[in-house]
Image (cartoon, rainbow, N blue to C red):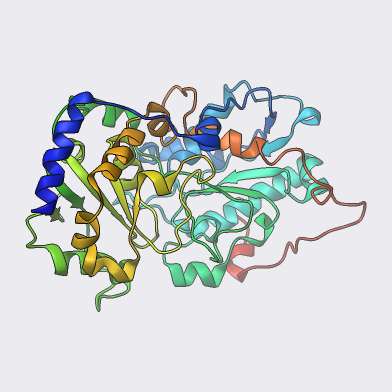
Length: 404
């Protein structure tokens, strides 16, 4: 009954269709314009590192790791780009490590370490800028499940660790989890790619009542990769299904209907549980569609956490508390729900989660640049003294040292 009263109250309040600006410094950060605050030099790499990979398999443009491609395209025409490396604050190496797909469209990162090493060896040989800092004023986009650990299984990703040659560089990656081997200090955590135009095409009138209390579509078990169960999503998704599959307040299923985007816009809460990694495009979709994200992923580091007030717009549920999910959500005061919805209705919040083509003010591209700008000026530790070296070029698994 509590949830039904909440739905009625929310429906009544929606008639005003209000938005609320993000208060304090976070709102200002989202609106920052990075132009004039930094200059970026783009290395001109042979096509085998980027464009030829995309030409071979255009599906790379549509998967959730596509930020590596669209960031490259954005920077090529961005006002922060400089063709004079002597005046650059940051150096960008355009490598597409996830654009190596299986027939089913999943990226295989097994060649990625060798590809990245090869690119770094090239820029270190052809230009002097890598060697003066060993990459500390360089950034790389590494959007795979566990970033620059380059593996889709967490245990193996942890065993590999971040590619040694990237230990001093800034990593722009979707993976974020506190105190994890695959998230190094100073990384910029970004949202995964979700197709902006596709979502735009499925918008419904903003005054549409949110008649679904809790919504989720996706896997609960991964029997192919986790036949015994319990490892996938650390059991959190299985717990959602086992506890709430028959609960009338929960619209959850493995089906992915053609009305998926519309259904999210009719929902109050959208579950965003971890899968193999703590992140997924559901977080982007929830924010864009104004559905309060229910984040079930312990220790997750969320995108642009210094700009987006996640505690104010989302609900965080510890993985061990999933069996109490119904009571947790129904106990949230209606006033708190309405405020979260007003914040989510703010266009700047939605824009910060998207990689639109062409780029738009305040979008994810600009949030990445803002993150880089906030790291300036470079400290003394960035540049090495003559003869000084910190990176071990022969470190890492033997297979990664083979030529690419």
